[in-house]
Amino acid sequence: MNNGGPEKMAQAVNTHYDYLFKVILVGAEERVKSGLLWAFTGNIDIISDYKKTIGVNFGINSLYFNKFCIKLQIWDISYAEHIRYLRPLYFKGASGCIMIIRSLKEAEAIVEEIQTHCDHPIPIFFILINDSPLIPHFNEYLQQLNIEIVESSFAGIEWLAQTMLTHRKTKNLNIAALYTINTDEIQATLNDLQQELLQSELERYDILRQERLDQLIFMKETLDEMKIPIVGDSVRIFTSHALIDINLVTGTTLAFPLKCDQCQKPCDRQRKRLCIKKAEDDGWSEELDAASLLILSTIFAFVTNQIPKHIQDQIKDIVRCHNYRKST
Image (cartoon, rainbow, N blue to C red):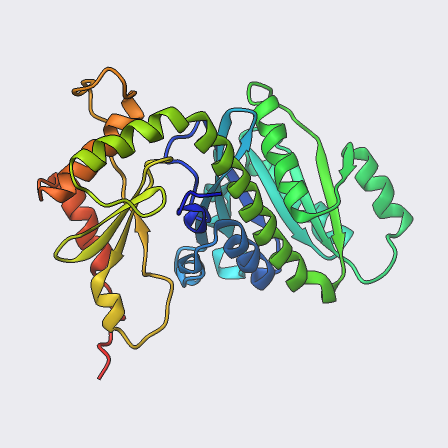
């Protein structure tokens, strides 16, 4: 695979999406929820102090079914007592739920809370942390919810996304899936989730690259005429504040702040994706489609230092870091 870009696919394969669903991540297992959010998004910035203040953390990533890009917006909602009065607000607008539990009593209480405060019944993916066989009463409860057993956390999230997509116009969706693990398997499960997501994104990248191969060739020929060097499937441009990496397959544009190289504090803030708006006219070539023209226009803007103000503002926000400490 000669693409030079899949290592960045933990972000998202495309800024475009066909459907956006809000998913609430609930339960009292705060560390496990934070770990799952990090594993799903691949962004350590998600592990923040937001839950201590506003009671929720956020993460976004995409899954793909056929040619549909399904973007999941995960709301990791705190179950601390002082946040209890805020939770109903965060439930509003949810299309699905990931619930991490250790007991039937806990599951029943949270399901009741969801049914009370969500706009309508939503599909639930249960992750049960259980170190002993399921009691018969729990099996009966799960059967009442029309439960489906899945083999991994990734399969459960895929089930949830597929269910929300298939039944997006349906209300009163009382169905659920269950994945059971024991305490010793938690970290391995989170690692497996991250790897399965990465593999899925790499496979999607290969498919997208093959679909856009003609456009990729046209763009590379155009860039060669412009004397702009290409690394794999990406163009890398230095600005005064950041290294800009533009992927020719997906159009994903990443900014790597230059000052991060001089910082002595290790973190994962070294790259952030820019939001590039699509131009309204078709540009200068009949051979290149609108997506290719947008990518080339982005490259040209950075090469010629004609960067729109809203992009400049995004870069300034990315390179601004309150935790920066210059190496001595």
